[in-house]
Amino acid sequence: MGDYAKAEQGFRALIKIDPRSAAAYSNLGVVYLRTNRLDSAIKSFEAAHKLAPQSVGISLNLGLAYFRKKDFQQAIPHFDRVLRSDPTDEQARYLKGMCHFVIDDYESTVRTLEPLWTREQNNLDFLFVLGIAYGKLKRTQDSEKTFERVSGELIF
Image (tube, rainbow, N blue to C red; front, side, top):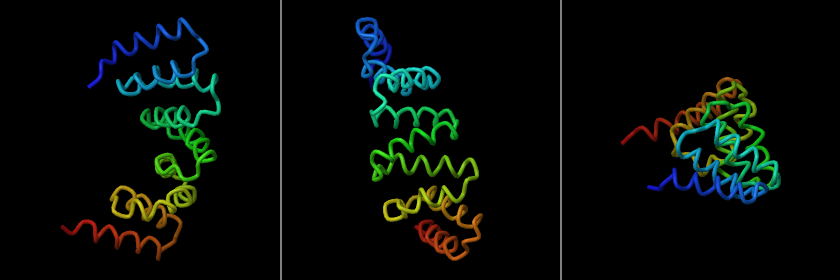
């Protein structure tokens, strides 16, 4: 794959040369994210975000780092920022919906995930989460429809 140690060293050197480089901090965060050093990734992405608060890519990566750390409450505002900038960003929408589900916010889960039905209707994780959220909201018909789709996906 990649030589992450060398990449880390290079991005750290860039930061010494230009401590205001959002790109260097962001790329260092990606190195940390890919090597599962999530706290370091978050610190790097936060530094990048302070320097370039308008960057949607930094917000997405920051949300992803919190998501992978299982700090779902902290991930949501970063995915929100991405979706405010680009409501069609399916990755941010999917991850935000999953965060809402894990923290038992079923109304937000449904509101966030429903627009992805066409794309994700064959994704069992998506169907289970959406079906359960509908059930928790007493939306029986929607829940049944979703779990019927699950049954169809489980038939080989």
